[in-house]
Structures are given as structure tokens and as C-alpha cells.
Length: 187
Image 1 (spheres, helix red, strand yellow):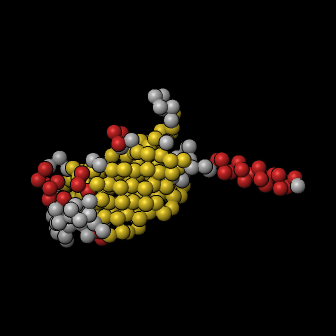
Image 2 (image 1 turned 90 degrees about the vertical axis):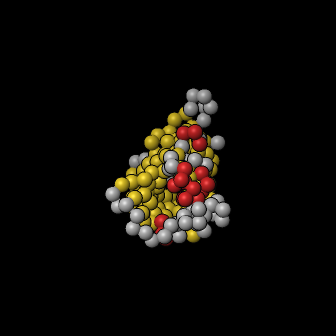
Image 3 (image 1 turned 90 degrees about the horizontal axis):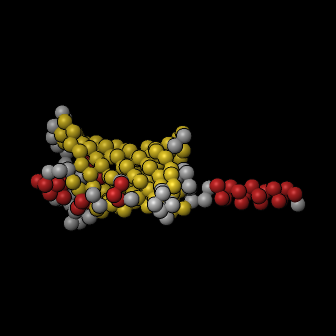
């Protein structure tokens, strides 16, 4: 009986320590950024201004599981002509594919405050597995809301041709570096 009591206590304690809660990205303090090589000599950067990113994670934001939707129409490179070209059928084809999505398939700790996030990324109607390197910058209790907030950075590199974005051209690099900076608020 004593062993059963110890086992139940251990299970309940573990359950509380690994309990996950809902978190949501604060759009005013988060960004979805990208960069690509142009003419093999320079880098063009941009971002997507409209996105919805949520996660399930513990209070210390370990082992997060993300779900993200990014509006392709919100692409912004600070150049209206280029942005309109990116929205066209030559690239994102936003009329047909208005969203990009990501869903976590696994999350593994790689060190103190770092993790590897694997998941399915869908762009231009094509779904591929990708791996993000993640880092938690810290977790605090927000003085105004009295809720936990976590600073998180996610990075990966994808090949745009594998997702059918743009054609094979010597003017653009194939690889796109993606950086997502998040201020996540526990719900």
C-alpha cells in the first residue's frame, strides 16, 4: 500500500510539473521575418504583418507545441512593387493560397532555454517537414495583466523551390531564412 501511495504521489507531482497551458503571441511585440539573397550579392528582408500564433507550454515555456497561421497577403518588404509581385502567381499566389500554416509534431529540449521544434509547414499548398531552433529569452509575470509572458525566438532555413514559391532563377537565392520573434502571453 505504501508503494502505491508513493507511485500516485509521483504521478500527480509529475502531472503538475509538466502541465501545459495555452499561450498566444502578442502581435504588437512579435514578428515573422524572412531574408533571401538577391543577385547573389545582397540580402532582401521582409516580414508578414498578419499572423496568429499560439502554443501549449508549461509555465517555464519548455516543450512548446506551436500552431501558426500567417496571412500571405500581409507580406511587406518596404517596396510596394516588390510586395505586389510577391503576392502574384509568380510567388505566393495569394488569391489561391492566402495562408501559410505550421503545426508542431515534436519539441525536444537541446539545452538550458533552447529546444528543437519539428513540424509541418504548408506554403503555396505544399506541406513539408521543417525544424526550427528555438530559444526562450525568459519568462516573467507581467505587471499589468499579472499573467506569465515568455520571450521566444525561432529560426529555420527553407528552400523556397521545394514549396513551389517562385521559379528557378539566378537572381534569387533558393534558401529563405525565417526568424520568428515572439512575446507569448499565457491565457
